[in-house]
Amino acid sequence: MNVVSYHPTPEELSYTFGGRAALGRVRPGTVMELYTEDCFGGLVRTVEDLPSRVCEFPYLNPVTGPFHVEGAEPGDTLALHFVSITPARDWAVSTTFPHFGALTGTHTTAMLQPPLEERVWRYDIDVDKGVAVYHARNSDFSVALPLDPMHGTVGVAPGANEARMTITPDAHGGNMDTPELRAGVTVYLGVNVEGGMFSIGDGHGLQGHGEVCGTAVESAMNTVVAVELIKGVATPWPRLEDDLHLMSTGSARPLEDAYRISQHDLVTWASELTGLDTLDAYQLVSQAGQAPVGNVCDTNYTMVAKLPKTYLGAPSVYEDAHARLRALGAQYGSTQSPA
Image 1 (cartoon, one colour):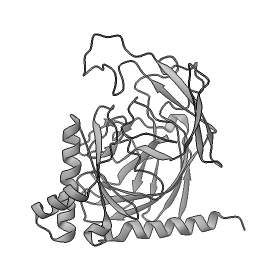
Image 2: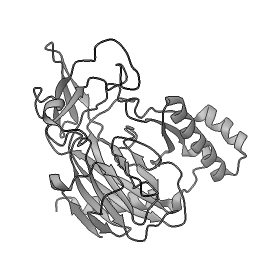
Image 3: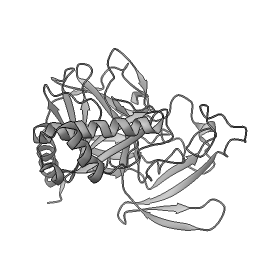
């Protein structure tokens, strides 16, 4: 088994998809052990560390990468299977920002009321117990919430020599912030440039659907991901697969357009997989599908369309990449067990 470990220095962190040289080259079939910083680069550590004081825009939401996948060319698809996602510290933070989030005026939703207060919450992370402990700032209230680690940001370089800030989700991936991107999930990303140039970051110990306040339980992560390449198969928007579901994403503004993109992709994908005509597939997805919200606070919003695979006859997609990578992840896990 080919296993590659990478722990970037602060200088190696990237803040764009595209426009950066690769940190390294990997072969399909590689298992990668990656360290990712939180969205504040580890600079917000206490409730006194307001991001506006300790962080510098646009150096927010760093990602680990990019990595060049050997043989990847435009028109191919990268498959990244998340074997494990584990908080790297025993604390995490969340914040409110002025002019950022779903329930405040922003630069695109101009309002006359004062901006929200900038405030930091610090969570205690206990991986062994599987909890993130919330502490209210203005009372003694606290509650243990179940950890559900995920990555908010994963993507490849966009096409046409474009560079996009990591905070922006689009067809290349980016800051989709969907809680569906947890361990055990495979994400499929269409390749736009030679090597694909994928990056991962923005770990969340826990996040509600929508990331309504603009931040989740922001945590550095130790993540294990298995990499595969599907040649000659294009993917228009990022897609996800777990053991039971197929999922399509869409990112845009307004939110209903993100919804339409994700539903359109799932309907047409279902049609291709089953041979149903478009309206029959439309009817099936309309009645059996789910629509988890990704984010409603970033420069683009993200929606997910989700359907149980059994309703499609349990089809094989992307050359059974999910099953193969899941097996590779299990093999990796067996090598990590104590003797």
